[in-house]
Image 1: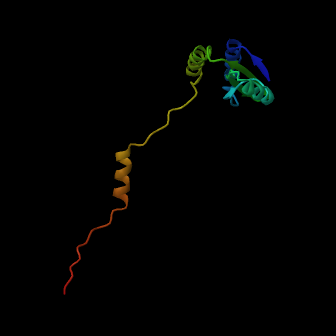
Image 2 (image 1 turned 120 degrees about the vertical axis):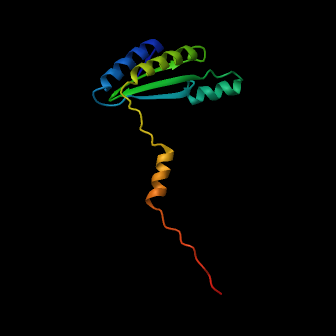
Length: 123
């Protein structure tokens, strides 16, 4: 796994998406991380120091895995870049056909309609 800066990460992610148009999938995961071991975090907690959490982003295509770490200050800029990237590369998706609720309800009622009969009770 290669830890890249955010801009080279997006460039590499672009090449992964272009390769995946023919065959395969790209998996992207986001995870909160401090990039420190559990022992170091516990020492920082007992010392009263604040732990700087970052967002660890990983992308996998086949056997190739890349990652980047984004801090709180850089997060807004990275999210904006990532959003425009996703909008540009989601061209292969197809819109789902949605059935009209009224038409579906009419089909249900029309197909299984029973004739009503009045019952007369003679006493």
